[in-house]
Image 1: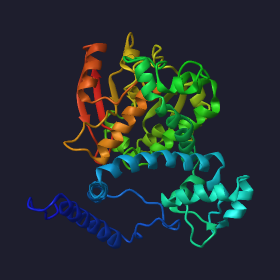
Image 2: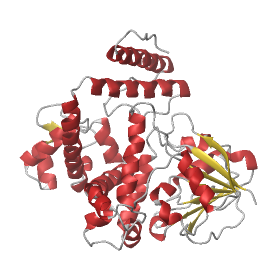
Image 3: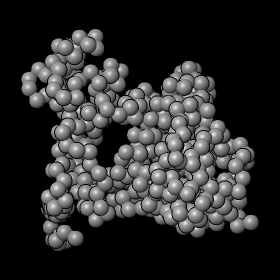
Image 4: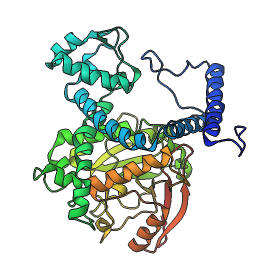
Length: 415
């Protein structure tokens, strides 16, 4: 722990925490031979830190965020944050709509004039958007009048899932959020995916709800799957937490049903660690259109709506990852979650004071409501829902892997 006394101000406490934890990070980088942290594109992709070092990284981020906010006035926190969010959405939309990241060479740079010509947008407009992006660590201008990549823009250029995230963010999440309060006024007790900000934002151009729209629009369904892959890249949501959070090998050659498993990212990671597992990934037809089986891995795909009767009987584990939070409590009526053991990641309870960690959870809570009339639930909520479904569900354990935003709940069926 850092040497902090109660006599110091909060600013001094945070400064000491930052110095303590960043010193530990610097020492680790030097002793392990890792290059220093940098926004430079030549920096090697960062591999996961050991648990103790990861704690210091997260603590440094938390303290830095609080210190930056503490040093601002309340007025700036209110007004500046609103402006930043709205304008960030604009430059991200620009990058996505004109595929800007892939128009900038991975090595070297391109002039604003040539970039303008390649995308068919006036040079002054390109400069306006790119310079705001640069202010947010996306792209850089190493020499005047020329655009090159930063580490942030490079991942957009190189990874389809990051471009999918950009697209879903600007074309679905942002418009939906603008109608969230309208939906709240129209449907105060919304308990249906048809009573959402998303439905209002589409102004009649919808099949009835988000999921039905994905079913009729394959490109959007593929983009949604890519966005889920992008989320899994973050330290708080990485798939390693799923692998390490439960002893998947305890039952030997177990059969696992991964409900809502998208294109199999989780299943492939699990079978790579535990090749004796046999995993059936279930999802909608539109989502599975982008799924591919991999040689040497016992992972198969099955079209299935989890509100219908489960066709795979007597599996050892029925696994739900980040799925139930897409549905309102009312959607659970008349259905059961079955299997010898069901696992699901639940939201982290709020801390004693606002934190970046807690803020991330609350962002998803609002997003789930705007898109699906759903919510992020805490442990007491899950206990109530399972009890209402059937009192033969028994909560065996709740595990939160270190550094994970999600928890793993283990429910067993007691016949």
